[in-house]
Length: 416
Image (cartoon, rainbow, N blue to C red; front, side, top):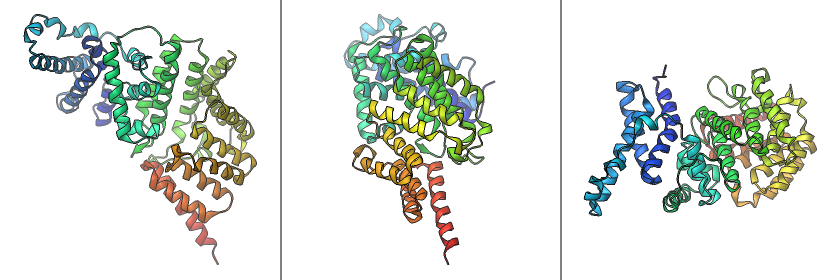
């Protein structure tokens, strides 16, 4: 039975969007116009379905509506270019075989197409997040740490490149040069779902669940690729903590304070098995190392039992593979836990000059945490407040504000 609530409709439409976009692109060979048509169909569904009920074949309904929009678009273009006669004599170009189209889920095929080698990796990732993940341009910009206008231009160029290259649908696995972009896309979709970058919700489970589903599909096709297994392991080992990281009012509960009895042991076991299998292949990649960090956290029955020296060693390896500022930030946290907060704060100074994290709330939040560990409560309060003012996530803002308030209250309570 389909959930008739607003969230139920939202979840259903998000799930159906890439499945509808795939056959429309395949039929009409115009990525940009097809996406516009699908967005119009989704809007029509959002208005009509709550009132009239969900049709028996919701995917077919959306494809039919999107196809009509494409028909209108093509006829308009034909009229503008004085090609009415050609359009009229080829009606089959305009009307898809909906019954046939709805028998297949094109989501994975669409994912591969968006990561085609004709696109740069950054463009492929952005386009796939938009078309397959359903993220807004603002959310994608936040994930890439770039302005929204810049990301909008990048996505637009990617659509034009797809159209100009004549890229078609193919059920073949992605080429080696595409695989890295495919995995990074799935990684970003999962992260946005696990911790929403903006808005009132801490988590967007529809995104993290979809990322896991798609990664499972890629892993089924490419079982010999260790990094695919590593990414799936990372997602499962992280997702296993989902139920414990949010309170009854969707407030953020940090890892050290989580009730670990709520962690999903089945997901942890599956993740560890996938990671063990991936590591046995001999070629260790960044996703496997991140999964190993997650596994170390999951294996600790109490926060104080966490093997921080092992985590620090793993981040040392990750730093050698990539200059990703988030890796450097996590490395600073691990160093602070092993060698003391002053060491972590020392490492943060290297990131202060890195423009990629300029103004990012996580840099201030980590600095606040380390300053609190070092006993500098006034400094910690200031950076918690700065971090709260910079995040666009309401649950994160509430958590950071509460941390500042807690320290402020404790300072006054101990004052003579």
